[in-house]
Length: 280
Image 1: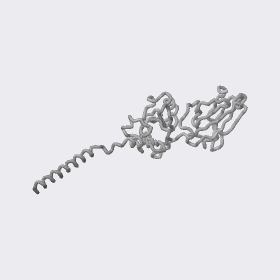
Image 2: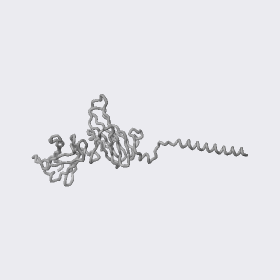
Image 3: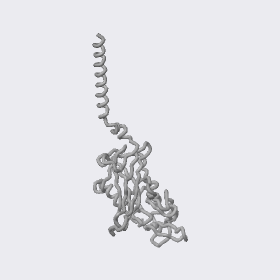
Image 4: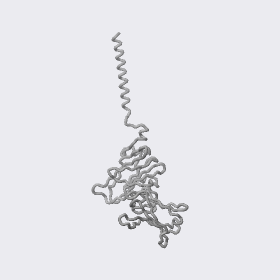
């Protein structure tokens, strides 16, 4: 009787052991590296070299790099007018957020922009960027390096993070360039905006301390009005500025001159001249 009881207990223990082994085997097949849905959407960071990012497009945690030819026409125009400037900027368009990084005009091939990391936090989208220059001989051809990124539209601020000591110029006072009417090296003038009682002259500049001056001149060369324009930033970074010209000033004026003063000797540095006749 005792022998039968021992055998019965042994069978029960063996069965329980088998059940435990099967349960352990099944649980080990569930990949622990696959994030939950909340983790995938609200993850703290994504590497730019993650192959999954090329097909994902979610402003809460995914992005993809595209060529300008893949973008809508308005975005293509924005890219084209930005290529000669070293600048990082962003634009919301048709339920998408586009991020554009340009290095300006380069004398040879081999100048590149590398997207190191994109971090999606509760406060912002952080874009970590690195630049590399050609090592050794490079094709002697003018190039305009750029990087264009698209994601679902986000209202979070876009912050550009420098890596390896690279300086990334950004816009201050405005998120992206508007259509450019005329330009010099240090001043980009947007298309003027006509209002009922005034004309708004606006654009971006990177002159010393962000200080511009202006004069409106009539046909005889007489100064109608002059003054100072202060941009949101200056001295190496692009700051937004605006100037309102009232109709009483605009009516007799023929041209607008925008200039700055040299920080070395105070001499006049001309930047742009605008014909005001079309805006009266």
